[in-house]
Amino acid sequence: MEICERNACIIRDAYQYLLEKCEGLTAHSLDKYLECPKKDSLNDVFFTVVCFYNDWYRPKKKRLMYDTENGAKISEILRNGNFEYMLDTYTDEPQKLYDDLMNNLNFGAVKEDNYTQRCVKIYVNIICGMSKYLSDFSTPESLYGYFNEARTPREKVKLVHEIVSASKQVHYKYKDRSNREREEGWGFALASNWIKDIGTESFCKPDVHVKRFMRELKFTKSSSEEPVFRDFLQMAEEAHSFDPFVTAFKADRLAYLIGSGDFYDPEDYGKVKYSGSTADFAAGEIKKYGI
Image 1: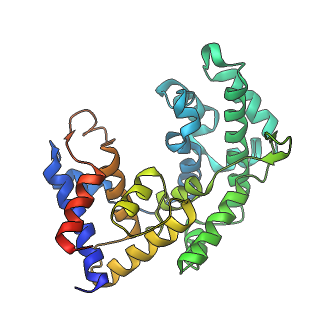
Image 2 (image 1 turned 45 degrees about the vertical axis):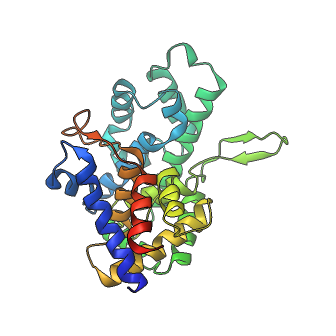
């Protein structure tokens, strides 16, 4: 069996594995997790930036922005991601956005903690920096056209770094342990995840689940984000050449669901009982294909 065919079969097997290991999950429900629609407006593109805190470990660690109340307040402050309002009100006024967030969000007893304030400052960097970046595009189509110019894994790495830099355009800085000033914004994984989640199906988020998926299946020898990202895209491209069903986006979602068991769709949340794991899936695939 050629590598392209084997890779495609492994991703197809991942789909079947989830159906077999999940009580209460239908193929129709699983298919919804694999949909990758493009955004219809720059408002929608920007709102994906606004909501990224759902995937950001810092505030999730202490539930600073993740809860329903604060999420609703952020949407209210930013007018549900109204892009023109953001440009007119906050893009060049990061301190105003910081003050409005700190004055309106409920952080309880940890409001004055350095950790809390640093999370909000990073968030402000990203929101202001990315709104400035997106202002260079007149339509979603022009943005997607630009992103599609990155064709190879290395070109896509370069694009992710461009987004990382954009998220730091407005500078709140901090001093590291060596007393050096550093800018803060998105890291590589969150920047690539944003590109993926706005409907660019040839990207992935090299998080803990994707990295474990790749290592367990011997698709990579690395545990670092960039090499895993490149290897994942290469694997997905090879699989896609054999089976058009497979995209990096779908492979990413399947790897995430197998590794996390996090069926987050409101119709599935708390109802799906998952009994699998990345290690279990990989062991079966290694035996099946002699990897």
